Amino acid sequence: MSDIKDKNLAKAGKLKIEWAGSQMKVLELLEKHFAKEKPLKDITIGACLHVTSETANLMIALKTAGAKLALCASNPLSTQDEVAASLSEDFDIPTFAIRDEDKETYYKHLNAVLDFKPQITMDDGADLVTLLHTERKSQLKEVLGSSEETTTGVIRLKAMLKDGALKIPVIAVNDSNTKHMFDNRYGTGQSTIDGIIRATNVLLAGKKFVVAGYGWCGRGLASRARGMGAQVIVTEVDPLKALEAVMDGFEVMPMEEAIKSADIICTATGNKDVLPLKMLTSLKDGAVVCNTGHFNVEFDYEGLVKAAKNRRVLRSNLEEITLKDGKKVFVLGEGRLINLVSAEGHPPDVMDMSFANQALAAEYLIQHKGKLKPGVYTIPRELDDMIAKLKLESLGTKIDTLTEEQKKYLSSWNEGT
Image 1 (cartoon, rainbow, N blue to C red):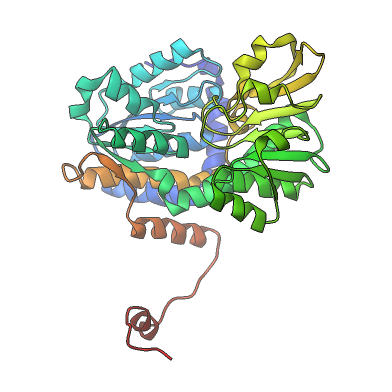
Image 2: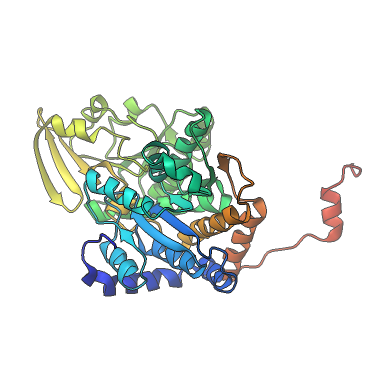
């Protein structure tokens, strides 16, 4: 039923899943609730997510809640084959994911998940929802709703809604405070640095490190790169974000200027053509270029390949491209998500909150069956706050509580000077 690389990898995958699970205390608490209540009983969920040990723990929690599951990868290079094997062999969860699968296989796997006729879908990049709305329209009437994990996917969904193309309600998990303020910033920040170092083993201290985009992911990456001693330059198109980067102490300049001095440049915008070929060829000799945005469209890797005089792979996920003028550019992970291609993605501690949001989004869709019109929604603030409180408890951290008098003061307008 599954399509995985090698079922014999399952033993190693199960150990990896167990270790990640030990760091995901909020999801663990939700799983205990799910075991009693079974809120997803007999509901089929089709998920298109990065197949990692953290995702595995979400799948296990959803199965505990009574759901029937099918999972495929949301990126051809992010799959951990041992985790895919364990999900299939140890947990009997149909899994369609093979690391480095080609585009044809990727879409075959998306269709395989939709063949299970899911009533709820989960996405990381909106590929599954897009396929539903284009080639599998007849299934839309069976779908109660969906949830979306990442910024890029939410952008696509809002574009669909604006065009009148979105036919189902979708929970924008990425818009929860306990997701984007933590996963995007701390998760992306740490795991991107991890991916760059694993691919290159370069010293970041003293390097000129260009971060394209100062959203939550860019903020996290810039701060972590500075923490490693890099001289960080930020590029932006949004004046408010650019101003924030300046106030945070970073140098801000146009990309055409920044790229000339970059030792390392990493895109984190969620947009395409941030680094067109013309800019890439102006990189200085020996520069490293990579991407931590969801899709591999942020810089023109294919154009760079066509412009190459010579190419060779020096290390895993490190490609040397020699241009016709003899200049060498080093590309990481073929322009795909470097934190998942070269490293292991976000640490489980932070994915704990993100996937708690995913689990609660599924429960919310069931509770509001037939009540939500097609649109892009966020989970209620009280659920967001509940996740934060549970995370604080798991960390052994206590906070203050408002007195009744304080609550009254904050809700009134009579008291002044």
